[in-house]
Image (cartoon, rainbow over all chains, first blue to last red; front, side, top):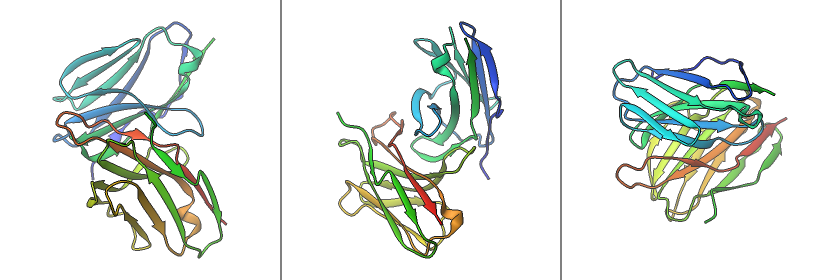
Length: 110
Length: 115
């Protein structure tokens, strides 16, 4: 059974701080990794994807991947109240076998 | 460039009835996925098409669930003899099949309530 684990939170950070979200996965064969943001009552929105070990930056977001440790993280710099949402980690074998974690609720306090 | 669309957005049905949902993917996308999401959980994979071929189906998908993508464009998901446990958000996502491109984009979802 392939598993993706996330701390359910809530993770509370003050406005302007760095939010750090973590995800671990069980399947060593996984090759593609995704972070989605989901507001309450809405569908998931893709914010980052990473396929190679290391860091990938896009604006205020940085995804970090360590395949040896089976660990992927998302950093959100200069957190804003509008970043308050549930963040879903998803792991796949290229374009197949997608498995989502339960999500981490982030609350950015003004 | 329109995104993934789903219809209907909400469906209320009585236990035992059949329901059908439709998903229209992003036009150039040839991969299409169906998921189910319940409150407090991440999306749970149901099935996956590449063009019109159904390539993967979750073991969790009972015989009451069936999906089609007859012309490799839109897809339908049918649930027969609905049960209260089927109440959930049903999400459709699409992606290209290009090498190195695996990102999925979700539609707004269909919220099913079985009474």
